[in-house]
Image: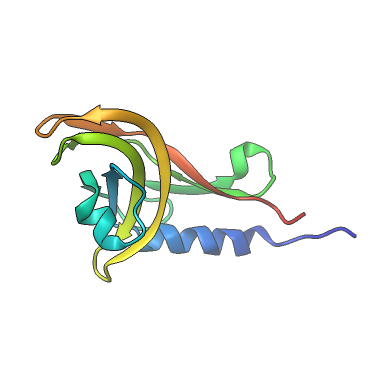
Amino acid sequence: MAKFVWDAAYDAQLASVADATDYLCVCSAQPTTYTEAYTTYMLAKTEVAEGDGNGDFTIADNDGTGAGRMLTVAAQPGVTVTNSGNAAYIALVKTATTELVGYTTCATQALVAGETTTIPTFALRVPDVV
């Protein structure tokens, strides 16, 4: 039996992530709470503009294949490293309500306090129903 879900439903889910996220935090370990992402494991953080289509977040077809939807988070260059350590995760947080919105892994690299780093572009994907 064929299945279908309207793209707007996926877009609403992804837009809620973009609308909630106001900071990206580079973390040394997998955060499970806002405090771990924003403080405990945080190596570097940068403020981002909330909402889809503002330059920091874009919702579109999943890799252009039409097989679902994706939220692309733009690269953030020149982010000051606050704490030295090995970057392993990038967390999305909402500071107003102290919530961990989501996270993803990143290429492991050593960061040194006082230097700068670039948070690379990454995407969160919602595949079509199967």
